[in-house]
Length: 128
Image (cartoon, rainbow, N blue to C red; front, side, top):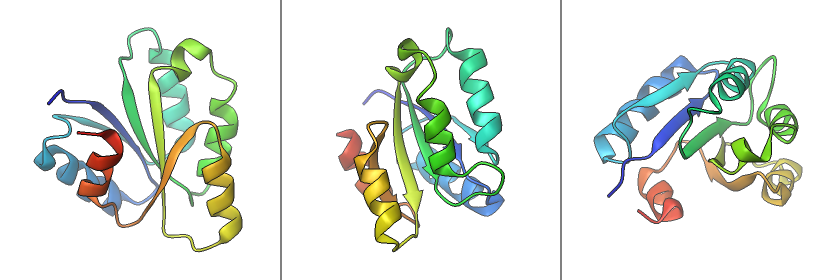
């Protein structure tokens, strides 16, 4: 199995820590880049776009400053060469059907995954 690059974006330090450990232990990846700010993650992606290889982003929906949907709105404006390298999965514990419909209908979100993250479900979605 090829290890994939993973970026975690979540305002919860606890979730970032747990998910990073789970992803590494599961063998999906050997390192995880974590951001507690969607704005900082977007800035990183734009700055590193030339060096970035295929990457999976696990994006929390509910965050202060810039939420998951605001991240997606900004991501829509990045060059296609960067968009083509990235697969985004939104993570949320929402039961709000408007949020679910919005996530599912976005061309940039592969899927909406429930929190807490189920590693086996993610592996299935990534076909690993």
